[in-house]
Structure formats: structure tokens, C-alpha cells
Image 1 (cartoon, rainbow, N blue to C red):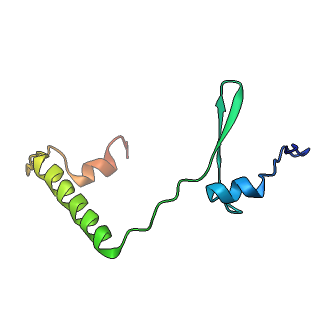
Image 2: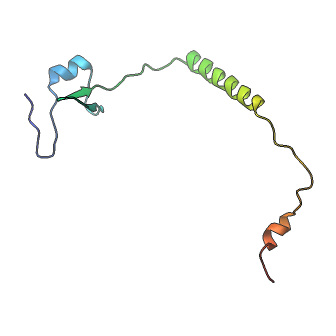
Length: 94
């Protein structure tokens, strides 16, 4: 059985840490679960190889291009009814 220190720290038994692959410095998640507390080990993601990363990047690029193609461009008109100078002098009384 583990004790809680005055700083509210708990020592994880080595056997359990080894069983779940928890290493020093890992962050674990604490969840209240009814009358008990669950500690979830970190989720380990396996690194992707270069080809998979490039394929995923290309797929994301295609999706972004499709989104941009569906977006209607704003109409461009030459006459806005104001000039840049109007922005700097608006509201001035000099």
C-alpha cells in the first residue's frame, strides 16, 4: 500500500509501473470513478515512417485545396467609395 506524502505525492509501485510501461517523467491521468480513483498510463504513439508522414501531408493538402476551391471569392471592385487618405484624415478637424 502506498502513502500520500505531505505534498500529496504518491509513489507508484515499480511492478505496476513496469507492467504498464510507465517511466519516470511520464504524465499519468487521474480520473474520479465513483468511489475509487483510476490512474491511466500515458498513451504511446508509435512514430510514423517518412512515407506515411508524406502521404498524410499530401492528403491534408488536397483537402485544404478542395476547401479553398469551394469557397466563393470576394468580388473585387475598383471603386470602394473611399481612398486610403480618407482613412487617415477621417474624424480630424485640422
